[in-house]
Amino acid sequence: ESASIDELLALSATFIEPPTPGIRGRVESDLAANLHDVPVPLNQRVLAYIELFQGRLHDFIEDGMKRGSKYLPMIQSVFRAEGLPVDLAYVPLIESAFNPNALSRTAARGVWQFMPATGTENGLRQDWYIDERSDPEKATVAAAKYLTTLGSMFNGDWHMALASYNSGPGRVQKAMKAGRSENFWELAEKRGILPNETRDYVPMILAAVVIASNPAQYGFEIDAEKIPAVETVALDKPVDLRRIAEWADITIGDIQTLNPELR
Image (cartoon, one colour):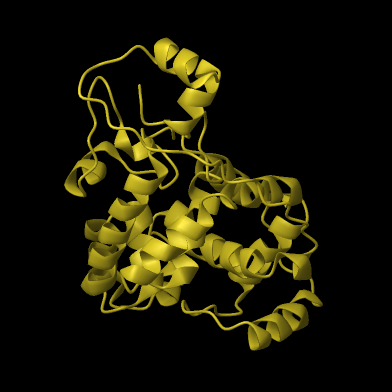
C-alpha cells in the first residue's frame, strides 16, 4: 500500500497556499493552552499546512488519526521511557497515516517508514520470512533508538533531527556547511540547500503535531479504534497461518492484520 508521505509531498508541491489571516490567532490560542515538547514556530509554512490539513486534506488526516489511536498509547509509552519528546509520536501520521503495510516509492516500509539499511542499523530483522519494519511495536522501539541518535547528533534541535529523519543526517550536515547555518528555518529559506521535500517535511510534521494534539479545535472528530485483546504466542518452528487461524477460530486475514511483519 502506498505511503502517505509520497502523496503529501506531491500535493504540497502543487496545492500549498498561503494561510488565511484568521488562522494565526486560532493556533496561537491553542498553543498557549497546550504546551508542546517540540517547539512549534508560527511561520507561514506551518500555518499553511495546518490550514491544508483541516481543509482539503481533512478526511485524509482524520482517517490517519483514527488508525493511529490504537498505536499511540504504545508509542507514547516507549518515547516517555526513552526520554524523547512525546510530540514525536505523531511523526507516523505524516509518514504512513499509521499504516503498518505502507510502502514508499523509495522502499521505505511500515508505520515509521524505515529504509532497509536504516531498519537493519536499528535492529529490525528483514529477510524472506519477516520484515520487522512492519511490526508497529518493534519499529517504534527502533524509531526511538534512531531519533535518540539524531537528537544527540543535532544537540537536541528536533527540527534538524526531523529533517535528518527525512533525508538522512549526512545530507543535513552538508546543508549546514553549505548554508553556513545550524537553523533549519534559515536553511529552508535558501533554495537548493536542503531537498525540497525536506523543506516541506518539517513544517508538515509540526502541523500534524498541532492538530493531533487537539483535534476538536480544528474540526476533527476521532472515534478511537478498539485495541484488540490479544495474547502473544512464541512458536519454535514454522506453522501454516491457516492452521493458526483455524485453531484460534478467526480468519487468516485477522491473523495477518495482527502480524503485519510476516511476509
